[in-house]
Length: 228
Image (cartoon, rainbow, N blue to C red; front, side):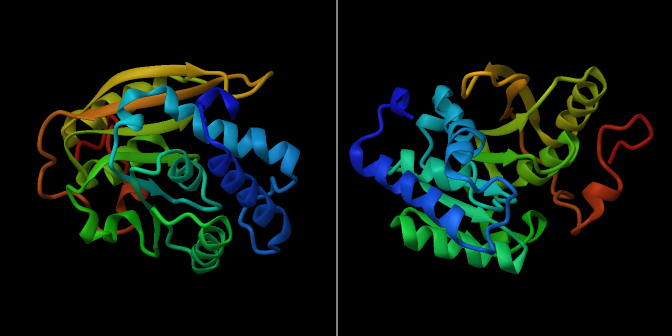
């Protein structure tokens, strides 16, 4: 974490996040042991600080925030940004509220809703984050309506696959998005196949999006038989 220039207060808040992750029996992750979580969760989240679009953002949304990564970790690292933690599951959203309090993270807000139903977030975000959420065409559909024109989606992915990237290209064209970078990152020693896929919002998203809750997963954009 030192390579990101965090001050002692920020490092203390991240340590508090690790403590609540280890001690809270309802933490929604299988990786809770601090020495492992500092790599799997914290370092992986903070890798996005390599991206200027993330460092410069003032309004960020983390979709399917779960245990708070990457959104809660980036809220600590970026005190000048406001981070909305979008989480539809009750237990996970309640854990996020406890984690924010325990780590004294005042620039993050827990929003208990599905991405498709977050109407207050439409067109309101500089950056949307997604980590281990869904197939990329699904993530693109969730994110596009929430981004302002000129904003960006940052999607954490593992090993690259040609078929998914081609499907994502087709989906992005329908949503006013364009892939601008796939950044290979090494958040911790020994990490393999970690990539940040960055999509810029270059055009208005058609008003038919977002489709109603659940449809993006059932009928994902970008397949050769599905165009909208």
